[in-house]
Image 1 (cartoon, rainbow, N blue to C red):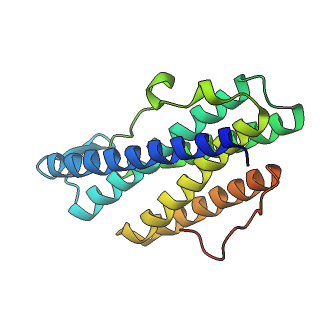
Image 2 (cartoon, one colour):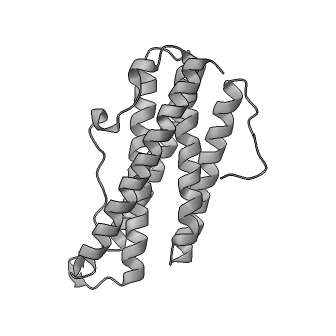
Length: 197
């Protein structure tokens, strides 16, 4: 791996940690605020239990990560750095993230919550100026997928509703497959460890 690719991965890892920390703080604040008020679900007032509030907060953090991944793959697609077969894979992975975002949005609404919206592209702080080669874009995407896999791994045991945990685990599987494919494309061991952390 080149020095610039290592720098991109390190910058992205720091950005992901900061995002997850902010998301956790925001989620805690939203939980505290939401616990005192009824939310509307299907046109009727519905009191949401603390466990549902917690699940909604976790789902919204996951949804925020999916919005981030969709935007990141758009950056890669528009970079002009990806060869046609690689671009097709990147767009396929983006479509997966769009499907995840759609299911998460629908689930948050069904639980009576308000889904988080995608940020403006510039607000994600992507290292666009450091993406100079196809390998740079792939390393950036691999870092995103690794971070997403780790985030879902942390979220699965936090869900009160075990059906939501099962769905999150299914998304976790897709994120790890994306990560393995990207690592392989970079000439790296696609499965660098026996466990995801």
